[in-house]
Length: 399
Image 1 (spheres, rainbow, N blue to C red):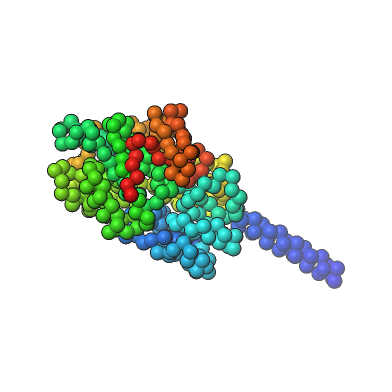
Image 2 (cartoon, rainbow, N blue to C red):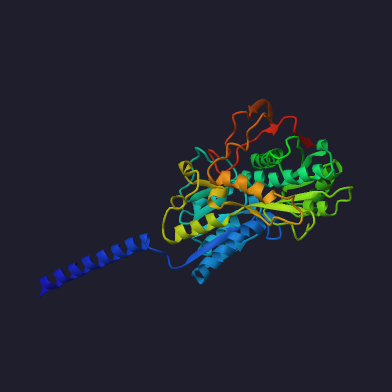
């Protein structure tokens, strides 16, 4: 009996071990019944950039309902991010999304290896070694900028044809936060989109030195308007420039082209169109990848897989879109002109954007120039924009 007991015990232990092993295998490869998803915002939802990013959070709530818990931290400064991340980790987060540019996020990912850290791309990740649980992503914003530039160009063309302005008054203004590749790439694409319609269009750029200051952005837009700009766009986080356009008191209206959030409510007579990065496709796919225990980048049909944990896409995969075209303000034929360019992007043709008889100058090193006759492919090696040249003779930086 003793021998039988021992044999039975060993058999039971063996069966139990196999069961535990099978359970672990199934648990590792199977679907998680519940997730906790964290969002860390550098601002709050009252600003266009954060509001636009928060739409991805809303999409997760709608898609998963009570199968996910969502924890949110707002107004988190770059150098104060450690405590919010610790709180989210203690709250059981499986994945955390960051819309800020804190360099601490990559280091924090190493401290919490069981949590997936997904940060909007803020630097060129090509060739960099990053933790396995750290990911960067961004929509190819230059595509939307170029298309919105077409809308601006169509309006300028209409204003010229109707005698509102003359050809030598084809001037657009851009309220920019900082002189970074992301900002420069965006406003250059915007100008080149306008020039594809009105070849003599020029641009004035005014840097605010801050991402979010209503008063400063509005004042900067007003200065550009006073300097003769007939279209204003921006890469800043408030509605200030749109308000400046709506309130402009000149002999002709000054129109606004938005970014991230529709401006039609605050500028109903002067807002033309808005381009936005759609964060929803990435966030939803990343959440589903974690839920089903799959690799995040392996779950995408975007670009940049050769760059490890970095990925981007444009109009082709719905990562960029045009929003809220104001049919009461845009010039006739604007939608058709924009659709033609969007179709080219969808078909994978993007070389035409940064291409032409232009010379670009590196603002940090005047000896570094680029000839765009053969074209420049943006986002070729990184989800973060890399075009960092000021086009000579057609872009003026206002001091």
